[in-house]
Length: 376
Image 1 (cartoon, helix red, strand yellow):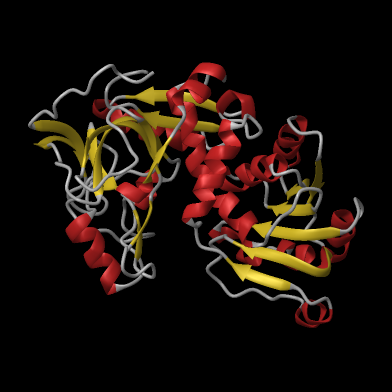
Image 2 (image 1 turned 60 degrees about the horizontal axis):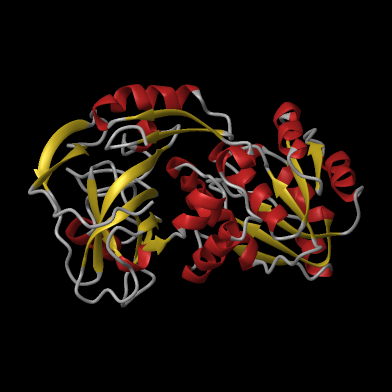
């Protein structure tokens, strides 16, 4: 629960610094960031650490300025506020989500602590304003990326531990995709593949939104684990045969929507064609994956069926508002309630052990977190 009174910011803090792409993270003492207009300084309680962090920090996937403090979504408490803050309060529990956009130009965007975006303007935006993220005791973040959480409900009534609240950040991605194609309660949606970190989150979110879900993937064992948690989830194991897979997807009834969160290695998969074929008249599809190669789609079928195909990068602000409400209502489960396990909590000084633990626990229901102030 919230501390009774705020502590003054210390002059320095510990942070993990990446000096150059491909190097190891180094624990350093840095000046504690100060709140300026449009920002909040947050005491970081728990920060996600992905299974592919070492690859991401190599600079071969995403670009970023160096030196910098990496990070991603995190949970923390407001430690200081800019003078223009009107809603957030000191000591309030917040989620920092990493999709940061320019206030005067939303086409300028970065992923806080990981990617300086696709344009020269976005790279300048990160380098000069938001270089240091959440692998630290404190971080400064834009006010609009700090989302107040009802601690009394989430941690009190529902009993969630602080690190379990990090699921909200992963859920936001799929919620944005599902909202983008206007998924409605009672509709049927294909989630494919459905056994990755973000794609399995799409199953959780779509179920909480009242949809009937077809979870499809090659890994039958993981699909059965996903199905066991939800009454309205059917599963399909892909066979890499378009006709067979299409028939399997259609066996449960008319399919209204399809969300795809494919990894880059799926460029040779036939599942996208099968899922498009399974959509009914006026079906909608959301493409959120990272397939880097061009792939074939059933062009004539899409035309005759009036399909809407929408590319979706991340989410909108109103999506995060709705997602937090869904969790605070109790409909959307987090952490152990969603079958997700935190397999390790590590301090900043143990980051190499944390990276190793994350890289060896890659199943969608397992996660590793950094806790800069010790185990919560």
